[in-house]
Length: 127
Image 1 (spheres, one colour):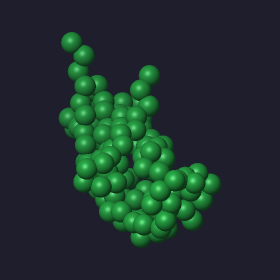
Image 2 (tube, helix red, strand yellow):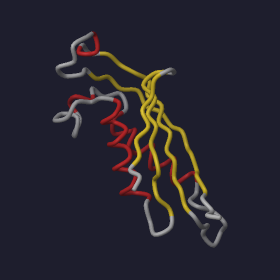
Image 3 (cartoon, helix red, strand yellow):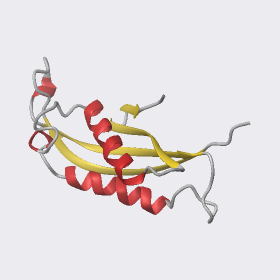
């Protein structure tokens, strides 16, 4: 049997965006209170009996969120070049968090970005 631990932290940020070339209301400026769920996995624990400290995951997620918080996403890199869709924002979080958190034992497994209470996207890079 393979052992796997999955840790999850939740954070949030508020930001506005407009979807370029979208054929509907979302092409106009509007905002969301985004919720971000970060999942980190490992198959073994460290010497303290932990995958990672929840605090470290939360701080890393908040750092990325703070760069977007109360901003117009269309003006913030990389969304000044790519459409600030929920899918692209989730991928951005994933990539930034892997740079900060991944090590030989623990890896960011998925980022779920909630645009509303009823709509979200889950981004992962599974092999």
